[in-house]
Length: 272
Image (cartoon, rainbow, N blue to C red):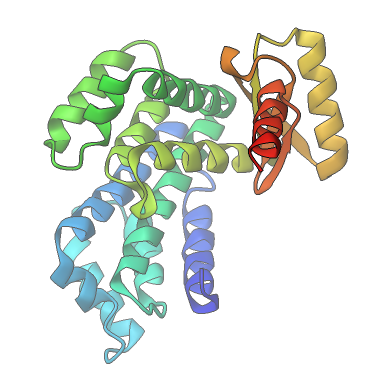
């Protein structure tokens, strides 16, 4: 985010936090749904996005426009937070849409945290991503922006009915819309990372040829926590193709000690 964008988002985030400080998990969920519904409105109405980010209009005027559109239709907390967001400076209309989506996602995570289900949501998002990547037909169906959104949402709801937290399903629905302008699978990955960040954790993506024992996971997690200075959430993917060893990615840092990587390097060396 640019500096002005971060300032606008930070102010809206503070406003939302103040407005939900005493709210129950159910009330937070309602507010999250409202904010994401507004994001959906902005996604489908380019003219409205442009009007709400018009640099020729004072921020107070743009906020008043938003209040006139939403007043009486959503909660006061939602209106207040979004009015602060809209009053900020935006270099592009898409930035406002992305920020509204992010605010809604933060509200969903806040509701899950209030319910004590944040760790479950993180794990469920990651495991659903694994299921999608392991099923090419499902991946194509869910990633197809040309397919009706309602059909893809219904498919996700049927797959996860009574198996996942409501917050997980809501976040996957947001991923289907292309969270932050990303593709579906990239959206899922980003949502996993935001959920971990809400728990003050770094995400480590681990690839191994066979499942790690609990003791191995604990040792690896402790070592990574020592390196990065914060708790690390391991996301382990078993892929026999790596043959042996382990690959760990944390942010842009990649530690690849797999046998597959060494074999590929040997092949490249022989090819020269």
